[in-house]
Length: 82
Image (cartoon, rainbow, N blue to C red; front, side, top):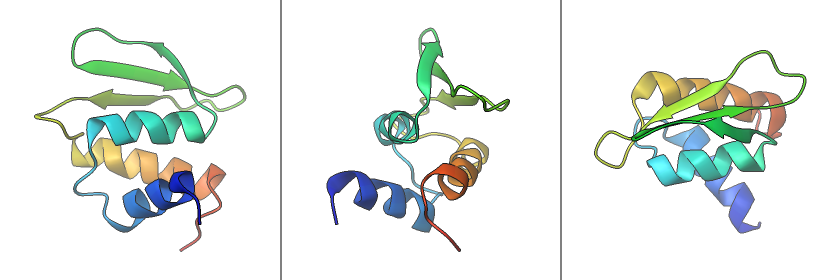
C-alpha cells in the first residue's frame, strides 16, 4: 500500500480529524486542481465535477462538514468503498 492510498484511507476512516495540509494533498490525489483561495481558505475543482472542494484552515484542521465533503469525493473517485 502506497502513501497516497494510506492518506485517503486514513481520511475516510476518521473524517473528524483531517489536517488542512492532508486535505489539500488528498484533493490533488483525487484529480482536483487548486482554483484559488486567500488566507486560510483553499478551493479545488475537478474537470467534469460540478462540486467544488473548499477547505478552511482552523488551527491546522478542516471543519467536519468539509471533511464529509472530501470523504464523499474519496468514495466517488478514490476507490475506497464503504
